[in-house]
Amino acid sequence: MAELSKSKRPSNIMTDPSLWKIWGVAEANLKDARRYLVESIAEIDSDRYSLTQFDEYLSQNELGLALGEIASIAEELVCKAAFWRRLEAAAEVMGRTQAAAKYREKFLAEVNRH
Image (cartoon, rainbow, N blue to C red):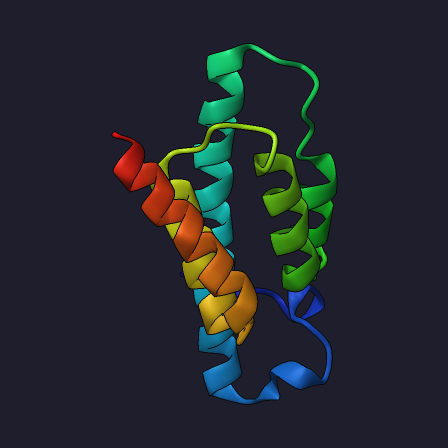
């Protein structure tokens, strides 16, 4: 992962190197989830869904808000198991255990659907 410029780094809370690792893992999983969500949206050929707010949250390092935004969009779609696995991983590394458990259930439901 390329090093971010200081202007893109989250303020004050990100001075601990372990937090940078957590942030990087969460961000990578959210970006992967976005890719899977775009595929789900394309399958239904809909202009109804926008990822603009998600992208804004991600660009501002608001990972919790980004997670909530992408999850709320996905609730209306049929998403691949891999999408839910990425959300689970992001939530887990962010310490959002209830959200991670919810996404794990959705992952397993999608796996069992096939």
